[in-house]
Every structure is written in structure tokens, then in C-alpha cells.
Length: 181
Image (cartoon, rainbow, N blue to C red; front, side, top):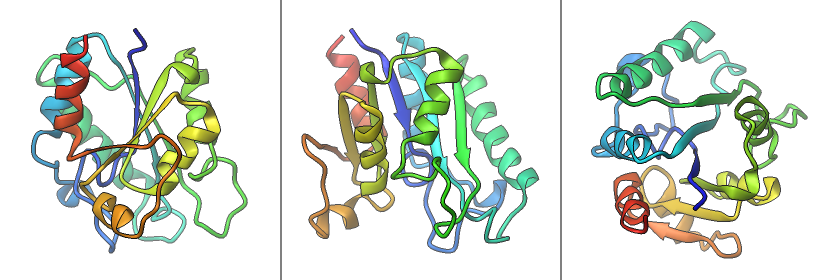
């Protein structure tokens, strides 16, 4: 069984904000998300995060702030004996022509290289169309939209990718994946 999960961050693991999540104090976990990550990790899943962080390019926060947010996430999973295998982020704004900003697949390629994994065996999880488009472009075999974050708005707009699955949140996806093992 393929056990590779690539997750968007804001809106999937932590609460999203239209004003940007700018520091560790604003980095608030979605209920059940840390437990879901821990359960998946302990069941042998490879966990990676691919996150657009244009707030860096826009000057809303600095690299130290982003590092503090990721430290908070890692501390929460480490406290329960789990880990995140890799975190990849795009620091560019939408006007940049980088290859890493989702919906482009560059972040997923970074993850594949860092972890030596086959993206065709990965599931991409996000709350926005661009997350799932990046997963499709990188060859992920499943695309899962969570209703948390921007997920419900994405559904309300009728945005979708071929074969997209929908779950309420990361915890319900973890329940589904772990029941299928």
C-alpha cells in the first residue's frame, strides 16, 4: 500500500487567515489535526508539507516567524512521538514566475527529492484548488480536498480536479486511511 501523504498547511493543519498567519501565536491548530498526523505517522505514513508562504515576499512576516510556526508544529507532533518527514515552502508572491508556487508542482518535486519518494504513490491533501492542481501536475494518484480552511469555499465555487475526493477535515481523512489498512 502507498503510504505517502503530502499536505497543504494553512487550512488543513492549522487555521487559515485572509490576513495571513504571521507568527507562532497566530498558528492555531485545527481541532484533531495534530492527533491525525500522529496517528498516521505511527501507522507508518510518510508525512510531508507543501505550503505557499507568499507572506514572506509580501513582507507580512520574516523567515524567523515561519521557522517559529514550523517549530510549533514539530513540537506538537514530537511531544506525541511522531514527526513530519519534510516541510517545503514557497516564499514567492503570485507575481513571481517561480516553479514552486502551487498550482505548479515544484514543492512536490522538492519533497520527492528530499525523501526519495515516488510522487505517483502519494496522496495530495489541500483546501484549495491550487493544492490539488499541484498534486495532479506532479503525478499524485489521489487528490483530497478538506472542507476546512478554504475547502468549503472551493466547493461552493464548483472548483474541482478530476477524481477529487472530499472529506470534512484531516482527522476524518486519517480515520478513512487508517480504516483501510
